[in-house]
Length: 197
Image (cartoon, rainbow, N blue to C red; front, side, top):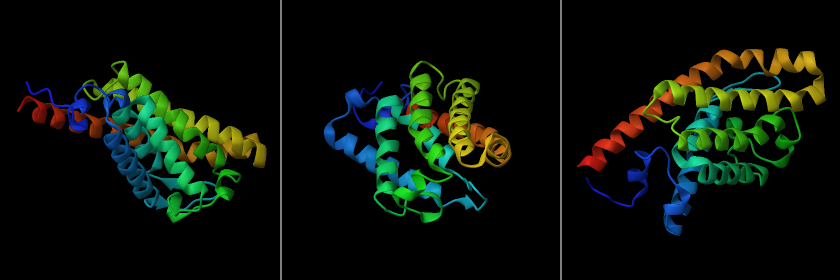
């Protein structure tokens, strides 16, 4: 079995471990992770007050692949890009005002959710066990909804926050968790095949 030290080899080992990366690999991983998160933001169904996007799919997958440390750093870097005004948030939005408005709670929840998924993945809730990976991502999506709705409740009230900020996203969260778990399974299977060669 080949014991390379490139990031692709670490995918087969549940998550990419930041401690084993050289600095250039860490920088590259963060760059490509933020690019992936940005692209997921452009897949959007406009809704008020919070749009449906593929951001949570990308956040959970980054957490699962990168592990809790590198995943958290990558998601935080992406949010910093958005806060600085780069067009990386939902629908190409950017600017600090998005962190203070209706979507603020969801944005702040992303690093937490990604880190929880990464932490669970590092402990065996990985692509080798699709159902465990699905549950990890479902927990991550639940964290986003709870924290996002809690912030939204301060702006529009608890009942409206649940109606507008939770209920429309439950089915999508389940579907995106399933898609994320299957994607992780495919990526880890591919990595195992590459590593075995």
